[in-house]
Length: 216
Image 1 (cartoon, helix red, strand yellow):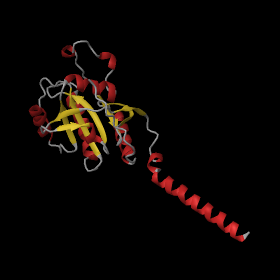
Image 2 (spheres, one colour):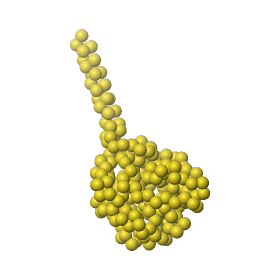
Image 3 (cartoon, one colour):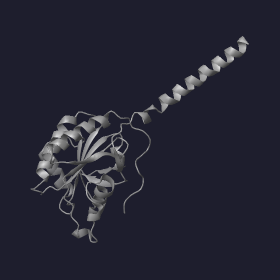
Image 4 (tube, helix red, strand yellow):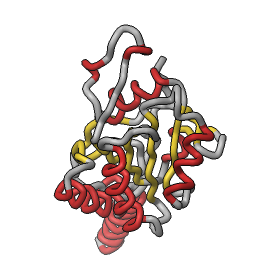
């Protein structure tokens, strides 16, 4: 009887140890916050201001703030990027943080033009990247992945299409678009963005959520 009790006790202890080992192994899944999940980043490849190619794979493991602007804009863009700079200053020393600024006007915003713009801001372009590329791909990402412009705004001729959005998107370390659409011109929404960035920085990188599909 004592042998049976000893056996079952040992078996129970082993089961408990296995349970806790599995829980520890998959604990990252349970460490994710309840911050709203709005979508998923699709695969892309754009030209960075230094002439290298920047892809969705470069986002993995980073909390990213995403915006669209154009270098010759004299209306909302300067204020947007002044506010974005506040975000940059607060988080530039975080190793798992990045800002991605895409052009709305790739016809004029070449790699060289984006480089000059980045240089004028005097920021670390490893932490704040400036991207250009094909107009249709840029706009598809804004509307279908990041949700910072209404997909219904698409027009038949891409040459006639123009997007001018004041909104920021927030992406977690796993390529999931989180939180809300943040108005880059409003101080209260900027404060909310910063709070949500801090929340996502505490989360772990889990799984392989980055899509392998590509917009046409």
